[in-house]
Amino acid sequence: MSTQVQYRRGTAAQNDAFLGALAEITVDTTNWVLRIADGATVGGYTLVGLNATQTLTNKVYNGTSVSVSGNVTASGNVSGTYLLGNASLVTGLSASKIFNGTTEANIGTSGGNANITVGGTSNVAVFTTGGLVITGAISLSGNIVSTASNATANIGSATTYFNTVHAKATSAQYADVAEKYVSDHAYPPGTVLDFSGDKEVTISSTSHSTSVAGVVSTNPAYIMNAGATGDAVVEVALLGRVPCNVVGTIVKGDRLVSSPTPGVAQALNSVLYQPGCIIGKALENYSSEQVGTIEVVVGRV
Image (cartoon, rainbow, N blue to C red; front, side, top):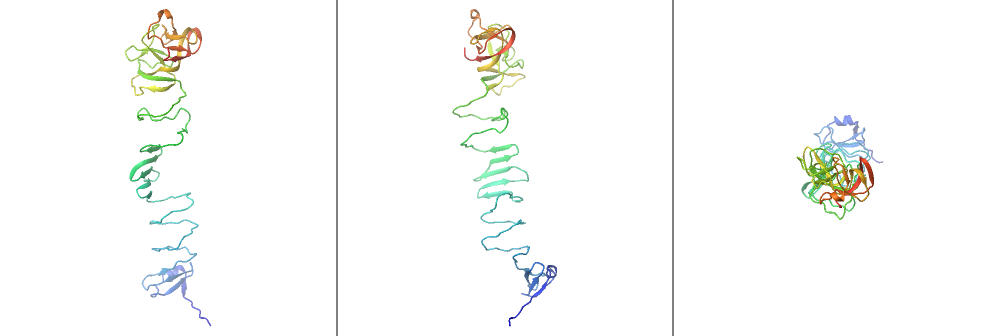
């Protein structure tokens, strides 16, 4: 007949309180695992079971894979060649870094910036709540497209700007090239100005003035002298089409000059022509002794 062997057994709590003899084996009937005593450690040492929930201390697994249906929690390091999964969540990483050699992604504080180090060079890319900061060149094979509303996003600013833009072609929705001048007043768009007064420009009020500077731009496509400062700075259209205040009878194509009406243009009287008095050419007909506004091409006389 075969011999039946039964080991000393008891609940997990009973095993935890039991001090067995050296090499004595007991059975934990709560978790159905074996425990081996060393004669000195209360509770002994638990052997790994297949279905039990256990705390493993200083254990090395030499198998090919471990399958876990729930969470894996560790108070120390989890190391290996790869960390694989469906990549839906990787959270609670106390080290805050993912790295390979001298290249790393670093999230220094909870909810803080994400910093990318490449080849030992720190902050090659920094992701912040305000946007992305890049150190070095940005190489693109596609387009840069604004996701904001039209005419709301800028490239650079008045205080932080680029040096040189190299491009094959550019395009703009607005129509004129303007330059900023310091003025004695913040004149509205369409106003005809002279190079005169206490500042660089002032409102024109002389017929056929040879000091005429141009017309205050409405929506310039390009602005020069962007750093100009003063109590009043106006953008004067130098080239392109711009709305202009006019008076009198004007035929499309007429050359326009300043008039006695302050800030308003009129058609050229060829008898009174002097070099330097032309503002531009009319793009529309107009006929009224009341001041109105028409499109004018400046810089083409």
